Image (cartoon, rainbow, N blue to C red; front, side, top):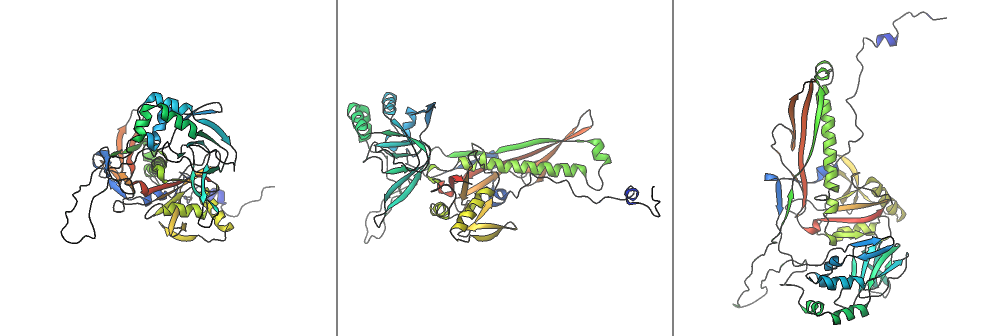
Length: 442
């Protein structure tokens, strides 16, 4: 039996009531700490040129390989990445040298075979040495594309495999035989490697005199510049937002439908902008780290020792960037060692810090299928010769700094179209402004 109501029910009352509601929510929105941390510089004309002093350093790149099944072979031309072969042009001798390398598949903990040159094709290798108190110690980590030894000198120093890895080894005997047989190689190795004096950073030296007395003749000098400076062109992120006029006219209360559509679209564009600043193969931070600023973890997970290694390789560091799972992994390592990381504030949020440097989370840093990620460290600002963001403001129909919203018109289906555009890039002014810890187990 239906109970008779003595007053208006809530279901009926809601027909006349105004429902309280939120603006549209979006799970894709993140703090985007990178966009807030980078100092932004105007790139007038759409291009930003980074001029540096002339650098004499050669042959410090990584070597590339080819593989057929489990067989790995070094690409002959890639042997020019070795310091002693940087300007060597004899393709036949490079081919002969590449054929002398012998492949070794090592398991974790196995010693790397002794040889004149060792090329790391895959995996992680630790250079070992004797510490100040006679104990064995790790003096450096190598990974894919790195090498030990050269055709000049005593050969590769002792090393062991940290993970299962594949290395190619050139024996001292084969290196000596090839040097004796090849006139072009022998003449090349006998020539000086550099064309002028350089400082410890590989830059052309600035001659000067200091601490002198009397009236000696002072050396003349000038600062030579890199003749092929890097130029960064602004990239673009664009989309066309479409809103039906019927929606814009009839369903604008209490919220403006067009404004809410624009707000969510702009959030998505900004998310894509930060993703590109990290991952773009042309200007993305992960792909523009100098080879000497790429470091490997000592044990797999990120440890306090690894973080200190990153900090020690530059004159100052302003920010770390890591995936939230990598930050959690670092926290676990700190807890295991009974170390309490610092806590600081950035952009209104409490974040973990190491040695006073904020560790900012960014889900744009990828994690591989093997559970490996990276931790980025950087110094920012032009006055510090650091990393900067590049943009262009003052655009036509600018909606917010560096982003424009242009109304394209209404088509024959009564749909309004808006073109949303932003221009951006990033530049590394000097190599030590940016570093990365690779192969971080999360």
